[in-house]
Image (tube, rainbow, N blue to C red; front, side, top):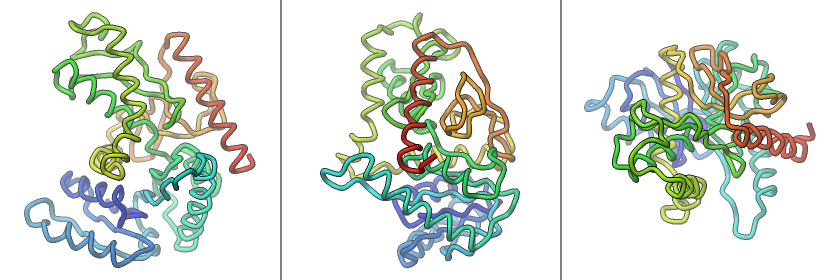
Length: 309
């Protein structure tokens, strides 16, 4: 399977490439970037360790390389300027993303390809890609709250001193301020979270607050996220490559789940080779359902402002 990473010279794209290299599942990784020299440097750095990792083709190339990719992963994006409003940043990133989509359309892409959006605001840009590309909606997905979910699980596990892999709690909705942690179904090793020793409402509130601010904290301390988003991207790509039908909180077009339509956001989604195969509804606490529907409204309002739809 070939993966083309648009923005492969940046922090997120290169970390995704590294995670895919260590995963050893895809056999071809192409790094595409407006700065080809940087992309070539990242590809060389990865290639130099190939004898110790996996037998893969790893290289930098122009936009034309996406034409035969099985998965086109878009990570390119702009950072917020000092004193810039969130809406201004969104408008700048929408403009950049339209240019990326124009390059992709000019280069061509396979009709069975999966377009995987990571660039922020991921839910808005996933919707834009779904509208502008001639692909079935299920073949256009966004990273959504996959990263938020692993942050929440990992920090909860750290506080409770339990294995992160046995910590189950998921975030639905927007990858942003209106995200909704689903505590009603949270478990530790199959045990209900609220019954687990040491769990209190105060601890849950603290972990949720820390998760909401974790992205900003990483940006403040090291300039931007890399490792965690890289492995999150690889997890989704591996699920597609292996057609695993795993349930992940990726962002995709909603067609009625939880009463939400016409926006891309994260709900439990069966993911496989065809992309977002099916949305799953489970019973939520009333406040969770209200929060999720509010998240849909927030995104619909943002789409109206920046895309005019």
